Image (cartoon, rainbow, N blue to C red; front, side, top):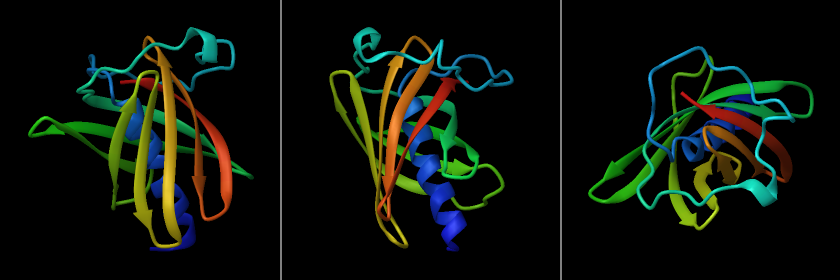
Length: 142
């Protein structure tokens, strides 16, 4: 996997966390604006069995990377995959839910990748870290 693809895979992990809520009808997703992204005080607890798909906008140092996060239920355990726009291979991610935070962890070519998501309704906000880099992201349930 190329370095750009790996960063895109990390972005895809963030999407998985966004999918923690049931998916609604498919619609064109718009990036969450700072005015609509959940604040720390206004976030809601995640479901114990989050499933669905989410659009993520991952803030990279020089661009915004769009990705799709998909969370499914595998025998009562949530699993996720993060697929950056333009990539063919999704990054599988482990899902951990602790009250208001949904954490995604995956193994990428340059080491571990982590995405932490919060939500208020269908709006998402969070952080990502990979290969020594960190950043923020926003998203919306599809």
